[in-house]
Amino acid sequence: MKNVLYLGLGSNIGNRVGNIIFALSFLQSSLFVDIKEISSFYKTSPVGGPKQRSFYNVVIKAYTSLNCDDLLLFLKQVEYYIFKRKKTMKWGPRRIDIDILFFGKKVVNRINLVIPHKEILNRLFILIPLNEIACQFEHPVFKRKIGDILSENLLILKHQKVKIIQVL
Image (cartoon, rainbow, N blue to C red):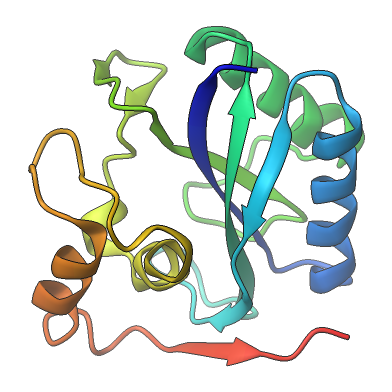
């Protein structure tokens, strides 16, 4: 396990907390992902897409021995086979969504994979939990720390509702 990565997980169908906890347990029990830190759970308003239930979101720091392409394939298998996710509309409701936010300092820009995740700067539901566990992490493209990026974008993104929730 040598590659550090940050993943964002979200759910807004069924037992949202249970879905995320199950996904985290599945990832940790796999031979591919070693979770080191988990942010608090956040209840967040959906961004884009149709009118839908709010999401619960977390961000994790983990290590993997996989390269970023194999990691993407593994995470998509978890989404589609374990959680029975169907191809739906962009930004639509989902039982689980797992996004690669960062893969070390790697920068990838292909049709099927963009790292760092291209929406990080536009999503408080990513920035706030990411700031909680990695405020000093430097975005490899923008060369700014996550804490600074969050501070700069709070007013711009104030319409997005993000609230920490207590998970027992």
